[in-house]
Length: 445
Image (cartoon, rainbow, N blue to C red; front, top):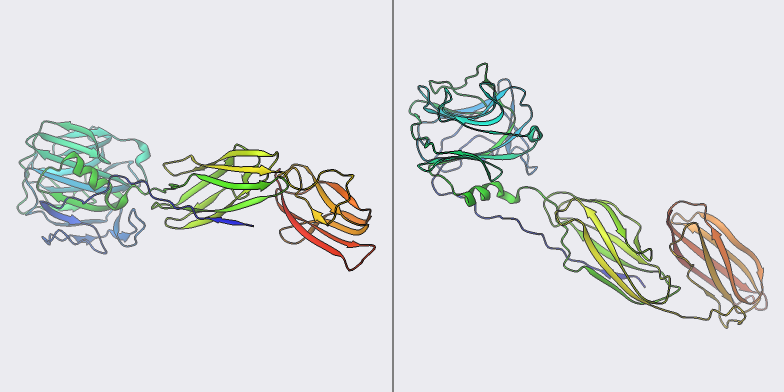
């Protein structure tokens, strides 16, 4: 009898907590518009940027910047001028030229706040912060693999200095306190640079419009701590990750007859927030196996798979299934055990009392397997094999046979899969005495 085993899963947690809100001056989550949701109403004006899908797959929750004209702007009159933190989520599509992500303030050299990437003015292939004319400059190299990926970029400044973070990790710092930003009568610009005079948009031979996606821009008038920066990076459970975390890694089939094929249904749940991709499920023992070995499981959904046990010898049996996937816990394992017992009579000289059909051996098999059956009387016999579509693939016996324990070998010329063998027997002495039974077997090439 088939047994249903529900295996529950719990997600492995990452550091997730309350995103800092103290001293938040402006927040642009781009929830269908460029409004400031800090409560201060320093709203942006959309000038050619277009709403798009954010890093979590939510539509109209980020902005796309085309690299030639699209940007968002507004007044920077109330933005921080000394201690602060600026956090930006970006996904760059092209960095073949210098790109400006977020800037504000200015008036003369050294009085603005600028986030650049690949600035041709001696900062190629670098993240760069400066205040125009290379003032207050802080740079760090980036890898070309950052293209088409979401990353968090934070910069803090205080009387302890200026620190640059990417995805929660410090990548550069200095002792400069940027405390002279001029904001009155100036603009902020998202997706393009700002001029020395503090007016946007501004492009030059070094830096131009950003090409890619921007989201969740936050501006604080204090320097966040390292741990608070990490919280920003994991907002909403980011980075997206599948999680296959078994609360039970053991399956016990109990007592199983040597001629029996037993199976158990197991539930595989993706408790993460990204697609779980199972590339293979293997076994270190041929007696324990699954027939479906790969899956793509959407976040929050599950699949049912079947673990089979086909005993080979009597006694205790143990094996391990190994699940290889893109989950952080991969490879995950399930230990499987059983106790194999011998039933029935194996003496071919004994006339059995009843009809019976034994489990094929070996099972699973490749390329041949033996099927035994018992006839209590001279019988007209039909024994054949069919596939899961009901199509007959082998006609093994179709004749009269004497009473006794008989066997036949199937040399399979078929593909890997589950097959069924069926016996239909009728007593020659008593035609009313009939026997029909079907069993399952597995061919593995």
